[in-house]
Image: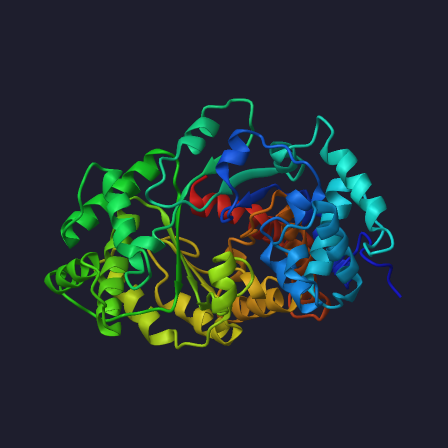
Length: 466
């Protein structure tokens, strides 16, 4: 029997162990997509206790706590931070097979030197040990980044953001990590969402413009893209949930936009026409500025209406959608490729039924002398666990080139989540090591080490030009 989470955790073969310990574990981190608050990095935020940094905003943990029967008072309610931590600790031993069990113990081990498993019995002791470190002068947002050897962070930022915190970070010569904004224009794309008209007004003010037509909207978005690029933006991101492709002229979409700005209810066809043309126009902007387009596909959000009204979005009431992906995605990418204006693109699916769809889709639009121009992104959200990562790796390696893969990202709001890169790297080395041990690939350790190092870090640095 193996010891729980020892140095060879998840590494089942000698080849896997060699690749991880001699190559993967030594590589820096390029965390090109996350939801960290740049203000916390700029101000080098300090934390009061483990609950603040560990449970605040972590919808993964919140979902698990609800499933264990913990009252909302101890999750998002007014219970004390210690009571919330103790409630989570009580649930922890019951998370058998859940990646939270692994992630949490990796975080305790990496940042606090705690190798005991967390439970209600030792909750107070671990609370005190963690807080002693957290409240020391050497513990802050930046020290967590530095301890994890992170060299690039891509945050997620609204087009209306003034990027003042990114600008401040870029001027700080004492911080050895590049923090770049990522352009996330979902509020400008999702015309059917509540608050769309109000948002367009806010967006217009960033360029001293009152947006009253579709042309004015596109002009403002192009100026915002240019502003982001001037301030270090290398990447964009779209949470599309469902992919639409319904061709329309600019004149048609102009009428649709004006209806929305006037508060009129749009038909589904009108929503799809607006979304399609806007995504095409944005894709052309990204190609012009040589920045990467990320498409996150397949989330079914805010399912619990009562809890959405009470707590808002992104608090653990989202799940996997099962809409069709292949045809509209193909048409969207093809409309840009036809004009030779398809930017480098990363495709993520939340529904694993679409793994092979994306694994084959990326091959349709490769080219331009760019290795892995179109990427099948790492297992996302509900798939960033062992089985989900393995399935993504298998689909990518069998249908494309895993050697050109840009690897892992945290997609997290927590500075402790960099251990997810370790989790990914162990799973990657175990997958590649298994192929070698089974005689499915030669045991050229020097070349394999190069492949592993590229997937863990080098491919991303080259792909994103960071």
